Length: 106
Image 1: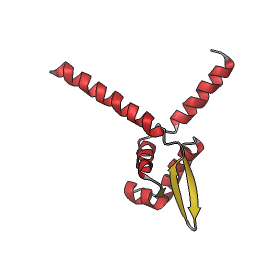
Image 2: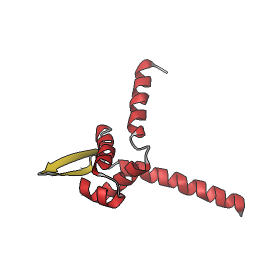
Image 3: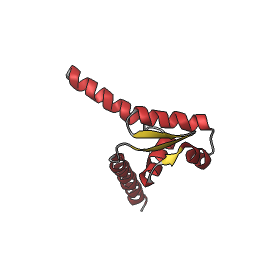
Image 4: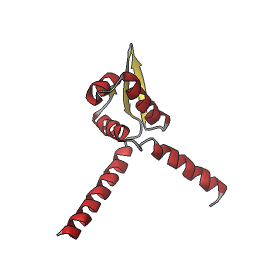
């Protein structure tokens, strides 16, 4: 693998790593319906503000979301909605695997 290609794939891996947590995947899907306040995630997930902020910071650093500060509240929205296509593809893989398992049992 060429050095330039290797760096590109390493960069892609860093971006994908940001999604490698169930909470962050859930957050990305929630943002598909529009922007959300950090406080909404805190309430929905049932964890403290700092934990939610860390997850959102990882998504932001990877380029998936952007924020908007309004007074004391911070709202997040998807920066690249195409992430939903990727998540749909992941869902299709899971459905396919489940069907294959069901076919083995039948």
